[in-house]
Image (cartoon, rainbow over all chains, first blue to last red; front, side, top):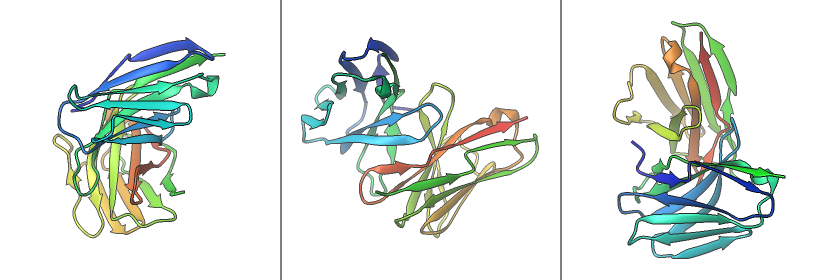
Length: 112
Length: 113
């Protein structure tokens, strides 16, 4: 079963607004990653945050991690219609072969 | 960047037949590849971990005789859905690691009629 739970399940916003997605997990992790999936396609890696980091930025993306609450958030600033996709968090428990456990995902729709 | 190629991108087959899906790492070697299954609007469920030169490790509830995985080389893993049934219809995605984040294939849409 998936250990990650994401909310909201779906988010609809206007272009230019910020989008915030949350992810919670249950077990200890080595790192947490966020992926994007366009409809009917594979996943694209967005950003990785390690368990000893609290915040990370990459372009318009900002990720936070609170290991005490076992939660993470992904913020997309100044959203664009092209950001429309599903977003998944994935936790890495630190196994040697890199097995990831994915959250349920948030479907983001950005209206032009 | 690291590229994972998955083939075919979609396949329609009749109930009772077998379907093979290939996953190739094009510009890197992958000792480990992962196979996922995804239902519409749902998350990815890890089916199995494919290890080069050894048997795959299946997740609980995944039938190893139903979903045959072969990882014969450092750049190729295959998933064969044997005796497919309509309930096997799904989106199957593979991934591989190139020393950093996982890189995903574009998935295979399997429809069993």
